[in-house]
Amino acid sequence: MLKTANRAIFSEDHHIFRDSVRKFFDTALVPNLDRFEEEGVCDRAFWKACGEAGIVSPSVPEAYGGLGLNFLFNTVITEEISYAGSSAGVVLQNDVCTDYFVHFGTEEQKARWLPGMVTGDVIVAIAMTEPGTGSDLQAIRTTAIREGDEYVINGSKTYITNGVQADLVILVAKTDPTAGGKGISLILVETNREGYKVGRKLDKVGQRSGDTAELFFNDVRVPVSNLLGQEGRGFACLMNSLPQERLSIAVLAQAGAQRAFDEAVKFTKDRKAFGTTVFDFQNTRFELADMAAKLQVGWVHLDWAIARLVAGNLTAVEASAAKLWHSELQGEICDRSLQLHGGAGYMNEYPIARLWRDARVSRIYGGTSEIMKEVIARSI
Image (cartoon, rainbow, N blue to C red; front, top):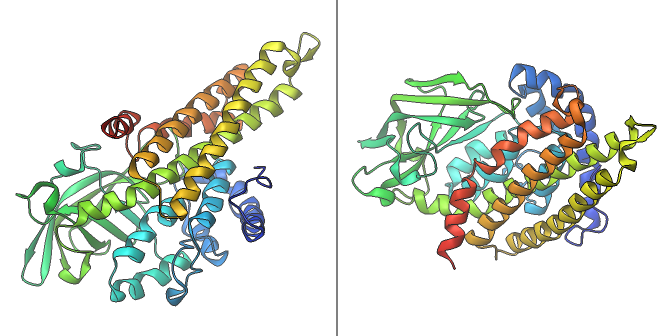
């Protein structure tokens, strides 16, 4: 269980909320983790249950059926999902997709989509990455060319979280292919549109319960009213939202690292070797002590970054640094914690195996560690 009583950024309201979230996950998520992993998706029933529990899109204003909460409440949900050992796509909807509607949506778009997002009836994906582009969003080839009162969309996307189940996709496309980054726009695409196709449910190393897919757009027509924000301002919208997205990954990483450490402590105290517990060996204690110190620093830094985001002061560089540091820490802690399990750590029956697999992509998605270093270096 995450220890949060001494974290100054949280009030009594947050602690009460966390207790309800934790109890909900104990009954609706944890018992289903293995099934979700095997099926490669957190099913619709789980999404609906999350909606009923008030933990989908909590930042949606009350006028549209939401709770109107800030990122501190998102953080509680994100931490608890990660600590539970889940890769549920609810985090993407809460921390990334929802704010695109809140900040850039028209009143019509908000009224149409936000209530269903809150109840878990509407699952949203954001489609940025393409087979040949990776982190270079300005190089995307998917187009949305205006013809009268419609956009005609052609192209493909890959590695799209929530892509299998999505009811709605926030598509990053070029409305002006000649204008580079200034020609990028965000287009809402309902997944029942003719010409829209979900490709393979991708077979991943880890995070297997978070459905990830290829998406194809073949002359998909949507009305111009599906433009999210201003035409040609899509790249600016993406850059505006990146600090929160990258901080969300840092939150996931820190909580995942803590769970891996806690599993190592539990295992080494229970496991006997040479007439004593593995924990009693000096090397084990020193390994755990070193990790505990790094986790302590991590929590303090994470809370600093969260507080700055909530206050509207977290910069893109600071968010990139947080994503870099915490994702790298997660990789280190998970690897060292698995090592302390010995051969048992390589067995899927132990939670550490899943935590270790799931951690690897944290240094890749949302911008690789190398890209984070480049962003930081440019500010020096």
